[in-house]
Length: 259
Image 1 (cartoon, rainbow, N blue to C red):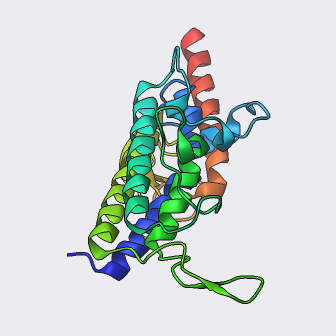
Image 2 (image 1 turned 180 degrees about the vertical axis):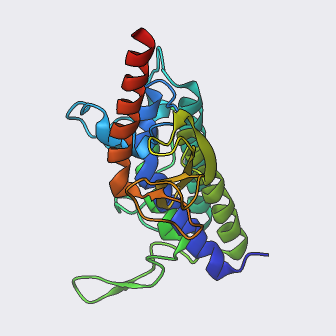
């Protein structure tokens, strides 16, 4: 069984990943599903700039209408993520929240007429749940007049700690899968190495930039270093040059066919 220390660490890390990728998921809802190539991180750098409104500050998905989402998988993942984290925050607040009304740290339950803290969106919910995972604000607090008041929150019971860990990891996994950022290795579709015609493999990981390797091995003459397996490897900084080389190779092939 996962220890409490591991549950805190992994749960907090999962929530940070969700927050960091949330804007990307909101953008994915409004754009067609991405192809495996180029990698989503690189496509983000190449796409035209969106409007001035920060994505993470838009209204929560559950409070917005979506007349024609371009990516249903991303929308479903976003709705599920919000619902799971909102419900988890409700559960934790009911068990450990002691903050008085008006305290900005307080999680406000929804009512038949108001969404409560859900109106602030997933980003705030993830921050709030992480605070409970890490037992923040669980000690008496000294006021300006020197008096002590009770802690805004109680320490999280172990069974709720493990439940928060489970939900956070589940939300992280689904979000990364929806964005194609989970750990995987797959061939670069319809593309061969411009230097040796070997198979190109795209390696993605949620905590690392994508890497492309050539399966030919040391005999490949591509102008990039080898990885630990003796393959030519395009690290993050070299990927734009690979995109340019692949596009040039494709254009040359089209000209040859047209000739």
